[in-house]
Image (cartoon, rainbow, N blue to C red; front, side, top):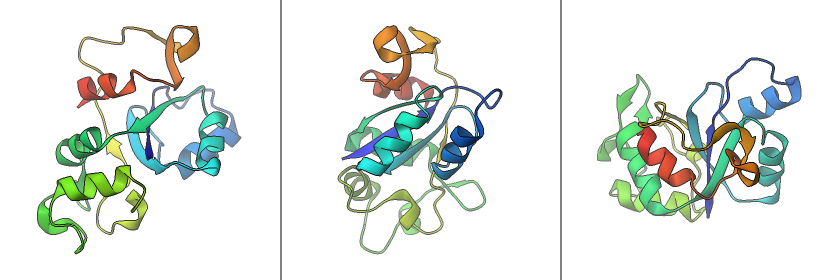
Length: 152
């Protein structure tokens, strides 16, 4: 599986070590999302920046929606089937490969490894400055897929 990671907090008052980690994750702006592989190293990075991001396991459905609606190639143009790697005929096949860790977003040429999202329609239903276990949205959030669908 892959992690869907969304930066929920801004760039002010962020420690330099967290800024470096967020840059490595391609999360330099607020409401930017990315897909990373599920490993011990990536989980350690996510735990380091848990005060700025929310993450959950990504299923092929949300990956497909992200690629179709917010995926961009160089020049900020939408992705078409001709922009995909040669092994993948459709966006559905690429989405299932990404969610199963067979390919990562950084391995795909000409496609940006992040997705620019909007603030969620209807606002946040939970607090934005607290961890998920405390009634917020930060950290490992089981409801993140529903929030991201409202952000598309």
